[in-house]
Image (cartoon, rainbow, N blue to C red; front, side):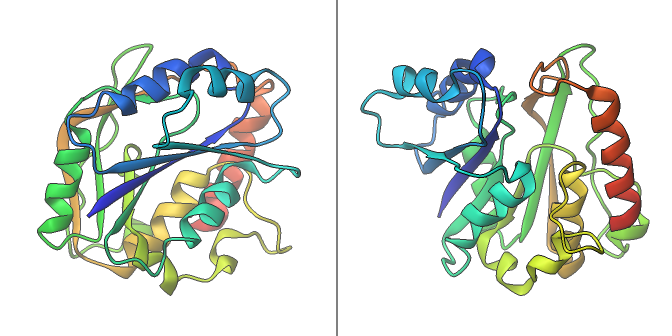
Length: 228
């Protein structure tokens, strides 16, 4: 098995080296990393080229239209949805891994037969971790949100979900609140869920990639309410 890391990026140049090096530092090399530059207006693509150089374990997609995080993730993940040996893992462009054994920890769970796995994380401002285990018997849509980061799923699970699950009632892709819009349908499909109680993900909440945080948070709450 191997992990395909997907990182949607918008104006992510400030943290891009930390992100890429945190993946490079993994003790287990069963991974490939796809980053998507979603029409950044900074030098994200240039910084990527300087950091990655000839390392063919990394790939950069440069969008010619704005897609936002969720559609970027789904578009890449769809390419692997028929591959039974692939696990999809999402790292936001302004975040990073913080445990060099993350790949091994995650793949160990999938080799036991899991379909969805998530890990502990910490916020950069206070170390808080809101991720935790979810009972097998509960309906994820009615359970408090607990699979925040690191979000991973067996790629073949996505083939059972229509793109309509990721859009609003007007047929537009969700722009914010994509974590629940992505994970809840996946969690609903299977009881083979696993939480790794180790901190593997650093959530940089002080990110500057979103210019209007008030608008973003309102949009996020609107999406979450609609999804649930």
